[in-house]
Image (cartoon, rainbow, N blue to C red):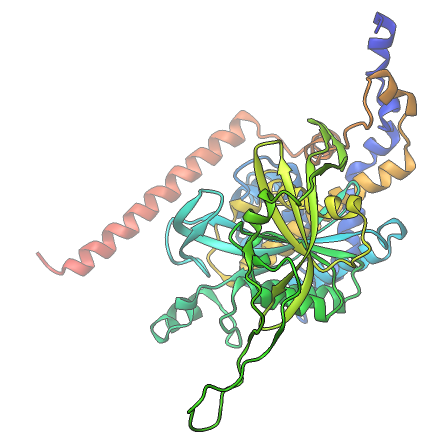
Length: 489
């Protein structure tokens, strides 16, 4: 590549970056907020201005996106964040109204009406104590251990350059529904009608909800927490939903169809016999790990897609197998991926028997985008910076995070359609495909075109003094409480 060509690759227009579109980015964010304003109106007031403050904070700030900091950075140092806190923690606006409207906008986008995939997963956030709604000692996948955490179950939508959360539910561990937790539930604002539900049940509830709302999708992908549930796979199959569900290596399958039915009553059994379904033939199941090692399991390299790390073209094996799925004999695809020549991973799917190897391999790998959606919701739009304890605050933060991720996804999608990249650029760089805009790229451009107010030295000094006074008063209040508890000396 000569010097002229090297300079040429830095021309923004060749990358589909229109100066007109970039300058308009701040107005685009305001137009997005305007479309959703009605969702933040209650019977007594219009709280949409606070939604604008919070949305700007989520997409415009990098760290410390709590109520007070968002209000000060967006509205000025004199704003103490009380209005934003009330809007998020106590105001009765409907989080589901925001989420449904995001789904409606996806439905209304012609290019997203076919080929979309739902990605079901959970995400845990570490908590300092047990007071936040749903907090408890539970497995935190991010930390790889059991810790005091708050866990959400999420649905993401993916197609091409679009990946965005579209629904979520806060998981409440079973101990939250014990009688001695009634006071904690009231304090956290847990709805009285809320009952215990497993993460798997919450996931199925959301899949049904988005389907009823008409969100277009062609398959559901999930990890092995959900995939090992024969009940969930049976429910999705019964609802004609194609799934690609990761399963553990110990999952049992049959390589030939066994005879399955009602077990005969035992001789001499008295009373009404219980109906028991079981394998009646001599067929023995094997683990999917054993299937991977069999001589007749043929691996073939399948090119799934180009990535920024090179070609994704691992060896895959696909076999038709039979499983006992929630007391039902089911024929499924077993899809095995030999990842990077090092480890094997396994998934079961109810995709039709005629489904191509390329399609099965693609569905097996699509879960990468749920991990990306979760990571970017945390790092780029402040999901894991929520410090509130109330159930309603969690739901409201979810709705605002979904709105923020949809704004960025929609921007990437519309720019890709409107401002085409130079097709010779990939050839010049010797690539099959150019990298898509990242969430961080869009936020970087937004911060440049719609900067948050900067504090003057005098304003920063006043803010520090105010912070010190508030801390002093807090200490004073605790000391008084301690003296009162001790009684007269």
